[in-house]
Length: 440
Image (cartoon, rainbow, N blue to C red; front, side):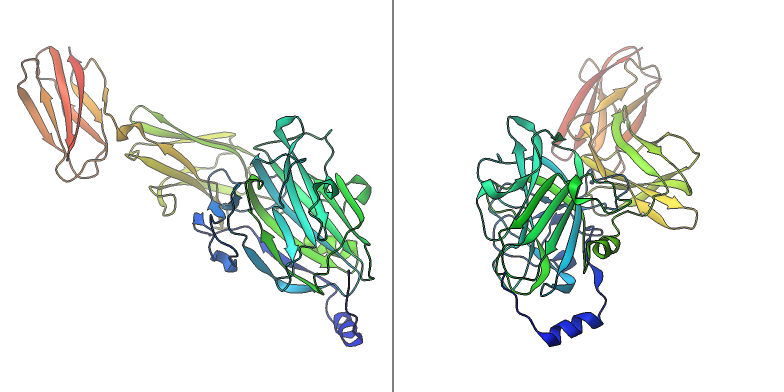
């Protein structure tokens, strides 16, 4: 690539630190929905925005990611970018490392026209010196491959892909590591390497890379790299999730690797699963953990919109593998749950968010049926004038109960009723739901 040499610039570079972490993004604290300009991201283009999601975060053991993440789609949408904390001057030989986690639902064919998903850029220039691609494994729609490309070339034949012998399944979280060696001398002499699920305890050898691009085609993008771009440009973009971006550089690869510091801090507990299911009139939450250490309790938080959460209960840590909690007041539509993992020093971390769609939104449940005395009625959330009527076989109303606002469970004493069939009628505004119960 064409680079501008300056003695003054060289002296200035020599006087500053020769390596640093210039980008870190876990999307933590972002609002679910459009990425927009959250976290200083800058929008480019028009159409569908990159989405922030929180359900089923990307978890890769030994690597730090957030409770929220970015999702791209196969659409002609926006291509947001975000500046580094400081620009990388490419007038000198250096190495750039970038790492992140990715999960792919679907992707275009590698022999078609895949478009890049992630790139390192100079915001003042249209060229993209380093790009990351995702495509479907040839002959297997349930597997994907990853690729890298440098320079201006858009020829898919020039992309360095992971080998077809590798097996990278869809809907699986992978750790991606990319190394970009910038050579200041002009000409096509930059190198790029890509690893999938590398060991992070030491800098990986280039000979172990899953994809390699040597003396690659280069682009005249100027003298700096200063931002990362997330792209979703057409139907040839993947349907994928990204999180845990880290970018560092140095005058040597060893310095760049040290500054990347990709090994995440050990977590006090590893949450291996977190699920919820309706059981009768309640919702049961079950979570499995591994390597529990330093945790005092699990606080259960609930939300009706997936954004604003309230604590509803707590379970003490007891060095178990499986924990559970029962929510006796399920919502009338969607309920969202998350765990607050509280450590011994009072600090805490959040789990990913799960959701449950209540069956109560369209029906009522009667327990027990047949009934001898107390009938429990589970129903949609009661409005201001909601009530339940009990109708006998002759069509006569024998009991009526006014319900308190927001109630979802009501108990009716039927011990004084004669044996036979009764209709339970729930009325909530214009909604009327009926079910039959047998009284013994």
